[in-house]
Length: 239
Image (tube, rainbow, N blue to C red; front, side, top):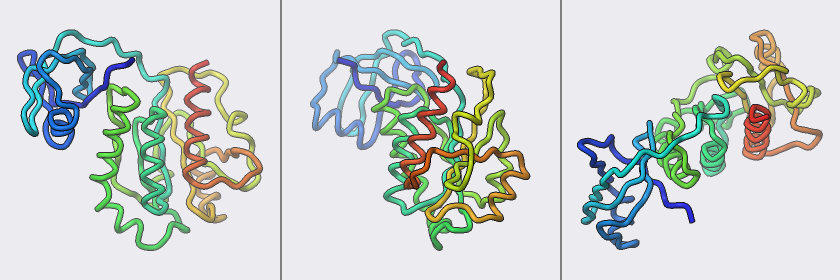
């Protein structure tokens, strides 16, 4: 059974600390004791470690040895139009599990009014969800979650391959991929809001070099499209 992984402060002198709710869970719920082993990450490297001290909201790990970490399959950025926050949280969780490096909330023309302004107050919660999902999926690094931006700034995002998902007539996502692919590629996928893109947004994205792509004839919910597209893209760069 795989050991649980926790994100900690950068180790110093062979020791690393965990504070707050996660430390409290270890001490009061799991009732950990010195000598028990876990995996830890300082958001840069992973280590095998053992409990050196566990009291209240503070757990101290003793680093035993580094854990080899495979390089990312590809660098993925998800620019996701903001939807109702419970569903956007689901996008953050699943995108993290699927290996994205950056998540950028986007306000499109049909984004529900008020969500863009309210998103700033949600960023801390989104980062907490990304942290928990990163630990569950045993990532070495958590994804970066940026502040929300407007559509015109989103289409200025630079990447080696850029696609925007569209329910309108568009080629299948797999058909739009470059034939030569390496792990060094930078990939950006732009996800539309409920109600889809406006014709003006489609024209602006195309004029800026984004490729329109389809996930099939069915109309998918935003969060479903996010998972489907990211899974396809990650696997396409694995082969």
